[in-house]
Image (cartoon, one colour):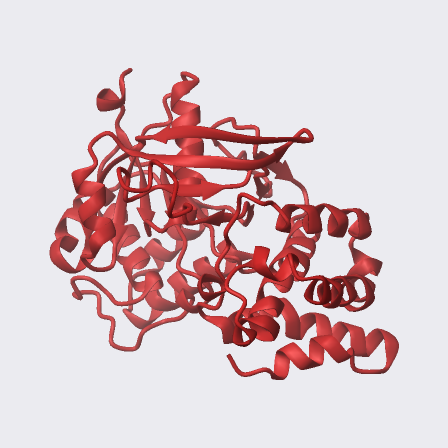
Length: 375
């Protein structure tokens, strides 16, 4: 099948650069390999320049893959045209619900950040659209259930431990608030496949001086490293497409701990410690000898000791992470990392601080400093 002939099988809440450079790129690669995964319908909360670009760029967008791959510094341009269209929820929620009842729909993907996992008390079953992600998803599943259609596979990409379990619980809570029947909650629980997963790939905006920057308003930059770890569901098969980045694992907790506490923890620590000092990017921080020494001490003297007892190979992962952060092609802006900073600190740094205190009976100085910092 050509791109235009592939059915719309994916409903994706969000069109930020991460989903486009990660999920949408992987689906493109799977389609190119002949797997025929399908095309993606993107749902955006409101109209903006990104929505305009998705409509205007019929030939898709480019992801620059830049960094070290097998010891070599590489740049690879990967064209992505797996997105069939973008729907602005505030303008055309009815069209989103029409996609929800398509028989071809197989997957629902989201990336609402940590802040998106909450019920909005103003949401109603008749809201067009609901404000919250749980409200939107509950409506989508409700109309699908009412059309007697099969369940879908739900892959929430938020960096939240047990993300699918928590999103399912929110949908069931929303269903209870809306007094939806027990048959629906049973269908949500048994017919839909909720896959806990962890995404790991550093994605940034493109360098302003890149020759494609003026031609492709959706241009993004991703490191060569990519991992999509998906926990195997109990007593069911995860029906997914094949991709080198996808790993089905028995226990996601180790992958989550090392990624969120080390890679993401260092990112948020840099925001708290160095953004007010005038540093603009992660790479700016790591080009400064004194700042680099502070980050290394935080990593190896406080973060690694706090989680080493339950993360095998944590020191090697820390070494690899430090190399990834130093990627000269990545211009990862501290201002971007600072989005929803308070929520990120709680998950990425506060938890590590608490474990350190429990293990060693004292407060780790650097962790305490970045937790207390005002951003």
